[in-house]
Image (cartoon, rainbow, N blue to C red; front, side, top):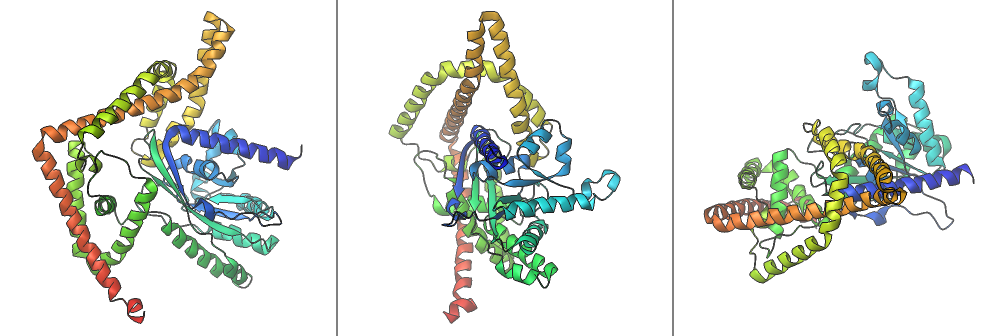
Length: 472
């Protein structure tokens, strides 16, 4: 078996592992635009790609490139990651390419330029083979509500590869990552793939003026990433957009239900497009809408309720049917869930203790749940299997080793359903017993809706009187 076949096998195994890890940590992962990924030509020539993505969830972000999108990409990672035991071996196995950043130099010293030249050359060779290089061009994971200024590395790698080894026909693939609650176990995530960028014009320009070509391509990448991410002026504005998008599209529900993140993304994207323009022309109206959303959001937080619960009518027949289904699911899964809780409570507690040290860094919490878990859980299962084997025989040890992870999945889903039932039950009773609170919430929701509708009308008027519309 050749080296390329071995590498392909390793990539497939890593992709499968990433999908498994993501499937365990996230309750649902949605993907928009998977069909936009370039396919090999009729002559089976793969299209070399530079994948660029936003970076808001630490070391969990790369898992989506390898797992959810299934791309056998060579990721770029900061060199300091190789100082972490176990992780360094995982990075080498995955073929991650180290980047030596100026801020990571020891004692403030700049990194060895020759080592970064080697990094670039490895990327060039990968693209020349028709491979994929994945970069997070913001340079570091962050907690800001908008995309951070992009570094030029992605553009430089692509253009240099085309000039040195081309023509290669490289494409840039923008990928946006959106999380419901980044650090919460069993939350949801969304991956948005944007249209591929053909850098042919910049490649042609680079042969005459490479710095200008790098700048122009970086600007195109920035614009493309803005289209596949949600970028807010502030976190308060993000709450306005979140509330406004739901209020505009949903007036009432029978029972509280989650909208798909893909639908929420499109609704928020549309609202943001209008806000970007109105923020300059009608700042007072935007500020009033932000303030109304802030009041409603604060009231929701203080009462422990969600928007979907506020507008739910809870018809008796639907409510009884929902409770009956939940009761049946509980009864069926309870035995396996108890076994899973017993076998996994210790590693769960250890991982939670580790992750709590990073509560003040929301973009790192998931990292310190997922990666320690990759070590702690298997070690615990091995220890439990050895103990069971010594106490009750080898067959019992093997059974524990097999059952522990499977029962753990059942337990996670059981706890998830129990938390959902408890949350919805408390919300139902709170809204029924405290009619004044419910009325105030609905009034505040309507106030936000009126403000949003005013902004929509202003945006429609601006569009109607824009130069483009008059020419049409």
